Length: 360
Ligand SMILES: Cc1ncc(COP(=O)(O)O)c(C=O)c1O
Image (cartoon, rainbow, N blue to C red; front, side, top):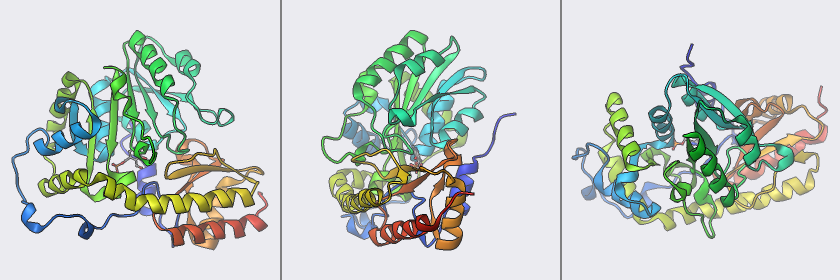
């Protein structure tokens, strides 16, 4: 029986909120009033059949690719689904990192493919391990799925490793799907997309997490033109013509991308400094150290993360994402970049609970 739901998404929509909400993954909202755009720049309807051409063009320019490699989608969520479903057939195998963003797993399961996992190990600082991937590839493997930056840890993959994974995939007749939704949170020397490494790479992204314009649902896929066209044709099944004003505003955001990103950068960097100080003061909290990203993945040295997360919410009105959604129940994820006062108070409350917490 194919799984036709996502427990994580349902939890995120209905149960993640708290007064001090550290269960986030993206930056705070960018206010529309700060974007140089007026009502006269917008129209309700437009001629969009397969991607709004100015948007396709603007994304192609941002990514340094030809527009026929760009598939526009309703957020990275739909981008991941279209990419996965266009590539996989029932009975194929798909190899997904673990821990992973749950929707990548659910989307792959929904295609009828067999989901297999490869580990990104805590003791290895969650690095991608080429040998671990090689060991898990079979003659049925058609897709390898990775996030970069890694959700939940924000660890950046070594670019040289991608070339090796690409070579493995080529040999196996598989593709590599890399979700790069967090990569622009590397503010200095932002890496170029792994899409440029070769035709076996398929990349998904959106303006949601790093730019704070989630409501525009501006997502995209980069794929070689034949596969890109197959994804547009697949999307015909969902009647998916995007919101025209949404696409028009997205084009304007892309024209002012640095300004939009810089607004959030200050908050992310302030939160990160607080988080580093928190880790320094609480050696019983273990997390991979990164210099970028909007999420961190924590473990308590003495164990008891599920109980800690429950109590944090019930007694301290502070939410974090339980590790069970990443198949790693002894961890939890916190998010940075929304509101520094809220983040600071959430950390303070976490510290208060840590002082008295003894795992059952
Ligand atoms: C790795 C990853 N991909 C995709 C998404 C979904 O993004 P969007 O809001 O653009 O659909 C998320 C959201 O948390 C994510 O963490």
